[in-house]
Amino acid sequence: MDAYDEDPGAPPGPGGPAPERSPADADSPAGADTPSGEDAAAGEGAGGARSARAAQRAQQPRTAPAVPSAAPGTGLAALSPRYQIAAALALALVGVAACVHLLMVFLSLAPANTLTKQHGKAVEEWVYPEFEQNWKLFAPNPLQQNIAIQVRAVVRAEDGGLRTTGWTDLSAQDGAAIDGNLVPSHAQQNELRRAWDFFVATHGADNRSVGMRGSLSEQYLRRIVVMRLYRTYPADREGVIQRVQIRSSTTNVQPPEWSRERVSDKPVYRVLPWWSVTADEAAGGVR
Image (cartoon, rainbow, N blue to C red; front, side, top):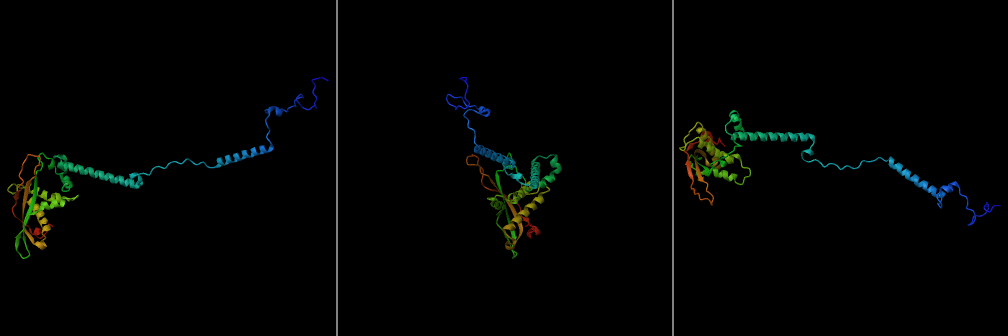
C-alpha cells in the first residue's frame, strides 16, 4: 500500500485528511452560517407585510398639495359684475357732469368768442346765479372797500298812523349769518350784493337811470329790501310798509400796520330817493 493512500474510514485530525465539501458549500463563503427555518419564515413574513403596505399606499387616492387661497378683492373688485357695471356707469356720469360744468364756467369767464355768441344763453342759465365766479380779488385793482346796504321804511300801523323805522343794516345781517357757517347759502353771500351792483351799473352818480335796464334794477333791489324788512318787522305786528329808502355805506379797508399808507376810516354814504312800494309788495307778495 502506498504511503500517500488515505483511509476512507479514518477520522479527521490534524494529520488526517480534510473532509470533502459539497458544491453548495464551495460556493458559500467559508465560515458563513446557514439560516434556520424559523429565521427564513420570519423574513418572508416581514417582506409580505411591506408588500401589503406598499399596495395599500398605491391604491389610496393622491391628494393635490394645498394651494393658498387668493386674497379677497377690495373696492369695485369686491362687487358682483352687475354692481360693477352700475358703479362704472355712475362714475362715468359724474365725470361727464364735472367736465361739462368746468367747460360752462370757463366759457362764462372767457372773452367773447364763437361758442359764447352761439350758446351764451345756455351758459348763463347753467352758471348763474349758483356758480358765478368773481375774479375782482385778483384784478389789477382789487376791491379795497367794504360796502354795506342799509334800508329804512315808512310803515302804516293798524291804527292808520305812519312811522319811520331806523336804518337796518342788511349787509350786517348777511355777515352774521355767514360767520361760522360752513355752508352759507348763495342768497346770503351774493343776493343783496349783486342787486346793488346791478343798480350801480345802470345808474349814474345822481341815481338816475343810464340804460334800458334801470327800472328793472330798481324793482329788483326794492323787492329784495322789502322782503328782508318783512322778515325783520312782520306786517302782522309792525304794520304794512308804504315806502322804503336805501343807502350804501362805503368804508375803506385799512392797510396793515407795517404799511405807511393812510386812508380815511369814515364811511361815505350814497342815499337813494324814497321809493313807493307797490300794492302786491306792500301786501307781502314778495315774501
